[in-house]
Length: 72
Image 1 (cartoon, helix red, strand yellow):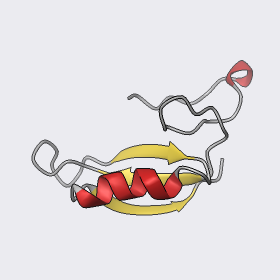
Image 2 (cartoon, one colour):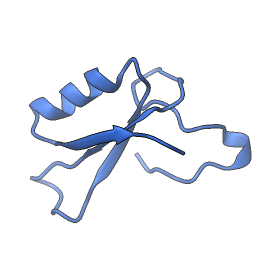
Image 3 (cartoon, rainbow, N blue to C red):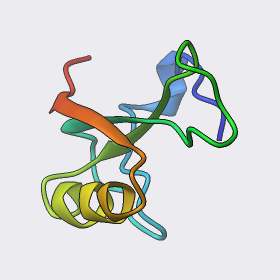
Image 4 (cartoon, rainbow, N blue to C red):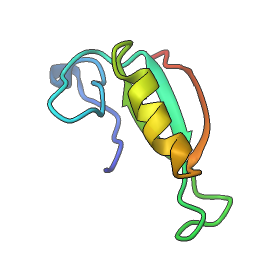
């Protein structure tokens, strides 16, 4: 997934959960240490409903670096 700066017509950033189109409220920072060095940090954005489940998914794999409120 490539995160690009949305244009005016794109609207607010949306949740990364499959099929969800709600506005993002949480930034989940992660990396797969087997594939990425410490400088590489990826982001999943999540709505309130999916922040915990997406965070748990990353956490059990040892990928989650942290989360913080997403402010645009």
